[in-house]
Length: 416
Image (tube, rainbow, N blue to C red; front, top):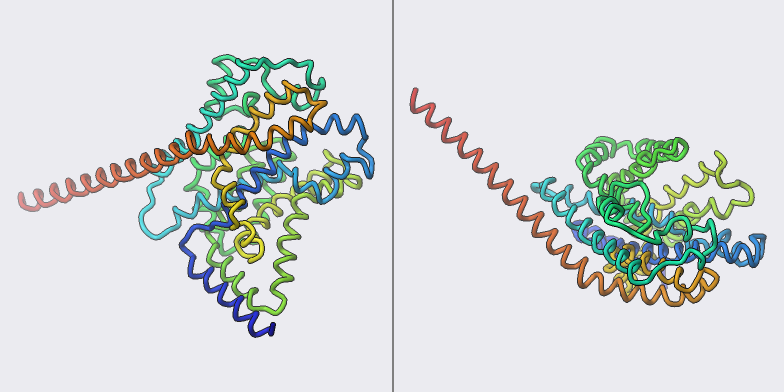
């Protein structure tokens, strides 16, 4: 195949990208699905880790070393996958507000609250029922392990209601809810994030550096809001600069070595995402150097999202049927897998983590499908109706107010 033919095809592809500037970024749905699966595998890893460490140690060549300090870590990089979620939220939540025409923040927020809270409440209810129906015995899990210290073995109305509010710092009925606390706060602060992103878009390198710096300060100071909210801002900044990102992609597709830059971008982003794990023998976790190294995962998360948008092979892979299906049920999978995993671990014991894994993965995927059909899907439709209704009522109220002021002004002029 000649270079001219390849360039023509790449040019045609880039033109299609530019022509779809206003359409849904479907590759990001696939990325969200993949990230959700990684979170599930990460929690399974947390169950298996104490057993693997006890049985085989953590030295070079051990099973634990293979899954935690080699590129295989990408499969269980759950904390890093959550950063990808945050960048994605910053991007996709901000995009509708940037479209031409009126955007009702009140309408958006009312729908967003329904979109988040209704599935969350359902997942907490399922977790509570599982605890009531299948009692959890502490003796089946190792003392001091993650499963022992972070999972509820009993529940009451007080814990149910406080976790359902999404204002707690930690959650033991459904551990994953900690991240939705920041999703909620970002939604409330969306106008501020948009304003900052628009003002700083021209100086995006400085803005990106400042965001990573603020996140690092948050880690060092123990201020979680400062740690996570700048990650959402990076996504919002990408939304504001989306046209520039697409143009940047288009130019590189026309170059002779376009495949190389695509591989470099995707591969570099993945390495940044897990570099703290790959360099763990040289840079201990918890040290200042280790913390700074871990913060490179923020840039890695942004790079992964950028690759999903602009690198054709990555985009094509994420637009395949399986990732797209996982993307549709990703929120349900994220919410429902933890109550199932905890129940099965306490039932079989963490020594049989492999049995827990064999049952949890297919069961969680099946439950996510059902949860999506019964809970999440209806919640999304209800959220859209709420958002539309609130927006219409606000528009009608403003129109009525404007008409009243116009009539009052005309009457005043007639009186004179």
